[in-house]
Length: 96
Image 1 (cartoon, rainbow, N blue to C red):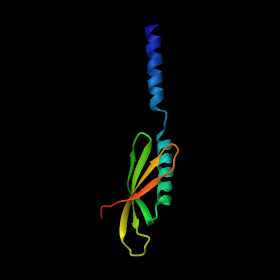
Image 2 (tube, helix red, strand yellow):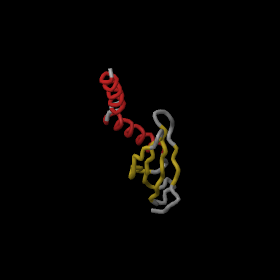
Image 3 (cartoon, rainbow, N blue to C red):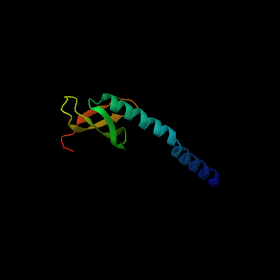
């Protein structure tokens, strides 16, 4: 009886580990990164850091050119809640 119980507990523990495949995580990263780039107002925007994964959100650092036409390169941070939610982008106050 103990052996059956132990086997059941181990099966449930291992089953939870495989709940999300590497491919599913990569698809989530691609989806959230594209949503962040789309939400950013920077020209020629690209992801330079991230993903940084929190409990229910992913953070990226985006770099690109200011849209005002002065050619200045700027950074922004994007917080994207997952699995649902829309990204929020905030310009970095630190000059790079």
